[in-house]
Image (tube, rainbow, N blue to C red; front, side, top):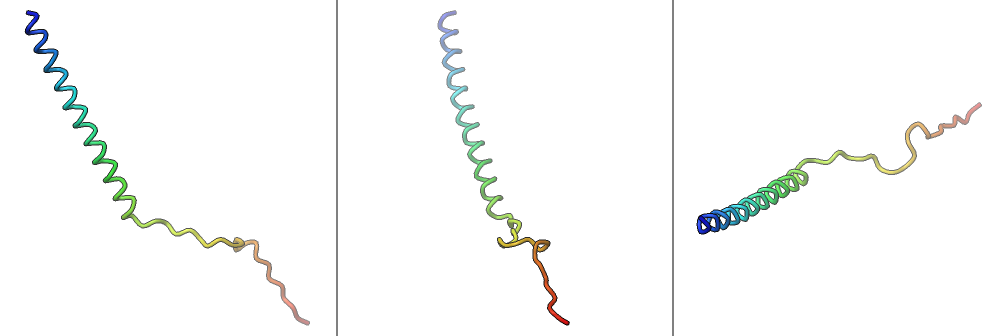
Length: 63
């Protein structure tokens, strides 16, 4: 019985390691896919710095 308990415990430890490696690799793959998609998607252009259009004054000089 003790031998079987020891064997099952060792098998469980091996399975835990395999699952951890699998999850780590899966997360790495997901993160790299997110980075690639973020690089490939076009970014929204921001307007150049300067006064906003509503703040521009127009003076009419005339008669």
